[in-house]
Image (cartoon, rainbow, N blue to C red; front, side, top):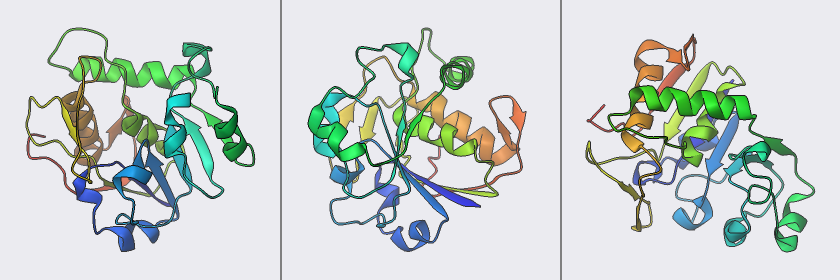
Amino acid sequence: MKIAVIGNGPSANGQGKHIDACDMVVRAGQYTHAFPRNEAGKKTTAWCWPGFAKMNKYVPQGKMEHWFSVPVAWDKKKSRLTNARMMAKCRKSKLVENPMGHYLALRHALELLSERRGLFPPTTGIIAIQMAMDFQPDQLLLAGFDVTKKDTKECHYADGRVWKFGPGHDLLAEKKLLARLQDKGKWLGLEVKTKVTWIGRPSCV
């Protein structure tokens, strides 16, 4: 099985042919805003997102799996669908929870790779990759996971927007984790045989 996990960065632009050819395509967060004209392909098997009501305007059309990046046990009041209109769009789709154990394992791995002190919750993009790895794919295609500087705190979206991350996420640690997966075949302490193609891999890792 070949799975594509697509972030919202510029490197996914123009890769639609390669992305849509995958058996499974997972997209994250605000992808309908980042690629309004399907610049990164049309196929979507699963959409990974936090499940917050404020994400209502980004809910894509069509039937697909909905992967929640924030475990229910993390915060029952905030991590559940609270908007009736959003629930109506999702109720015909399969809803998949990210287990708390998976979430904590990923956060711990990032803490070990971080050059900063503190607790850093994973981004929705890295959680989408984590959940995709549960399928034990033979091949994994990554695109749209961009960072331009080693110390960057900005997320550069394909549509030109720049969102400055607060201290809560560590993008460099996440890229190190992905580099370890591609170079050494190691993911969260386990050896895997997944062949990784990372389009737009940043030079800092």
